[in-house]
Image (cartoon, rainbow, N blue to C red; front, side, top):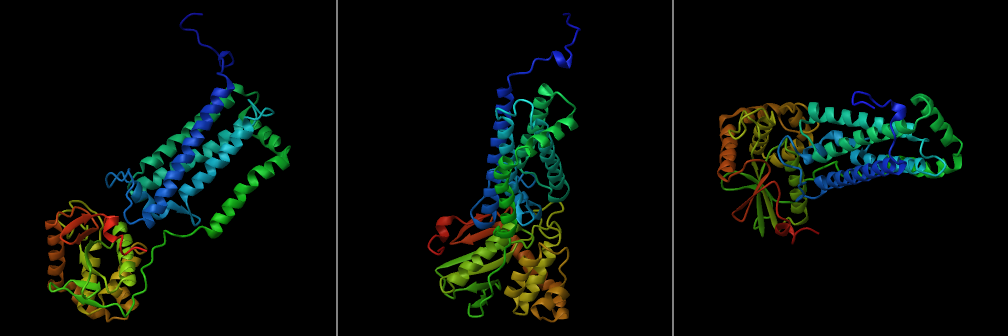
Length: 393
């Protein structure tokens, strides 16, 4: 045969079937492990105040940002958990395809269809990351690569051992499965049941709500005019620099508020503002957290009317679900006079207080939110677990 001659598809000698099957099985294992990591990371992002994933590298490459988005949950279940169930089901179907009565031809067309579905989902999730989240998850990208590799591997097996067209192969695979109803029922019924139970009973740990504002917990202002809540003579004072459009700020604030509610005579929480809004914060040089500065002004205005903590909790709760929070809406929710709140918000003195908070945050070396000043030591992003160990049940 000359160098210019090519082998026809029929002349291509396939590798042993076991090599293809093992490759597909390894991809399924990698996919399941990746989905498991993402499921654990999603849980810890919301529950563990000190957690930061290894791939939270920059604003654009950040697994935590993706996990915090509303698109990380589908039908009341984290997408990563659906991925674990999907890979487990795919692995079961792969096991049936490797059975002695099925290999090497049966079920590989059907596996190709399943892998194509996984790949299309990967494209949809990738577009959501680009168009809506504006951040990328390295582990998610790995799962996308697994899905496309599975598609190629399954198609390769089908093409190497096919005897019919693809559509006919799918029909024959379905016919093969229907001819074994008991086996298929006992194999896949647990997956259907698991999906139903997850949708009905999966705990919604990602729904963050502030603790009720206890009227018995003391509130006041520091000598500099910064609002605080908790102990008048605290064993531990935590000064938080926060942004109402920052998820980590919201999570940490709720956790600290819960600690204050549990230990009102031991912990004091002091709130200060550090909106990562390019219109207010000189640290931010491009459009980011647009509107966070206005929300901070609104909170400072509420503080002047003695309603800071009610408005503060409401802003953290509502800022992630509404495009615009107006003084009229906030005033109605906390039963304040809307005109007085608007006047206080637009007062130059209110703006000076905000700029003072931002200046002090910059002087502490704050480069992102949240930031915490405790016993003269400044922490960015989270507080060391040892610092709160004595107060966490």
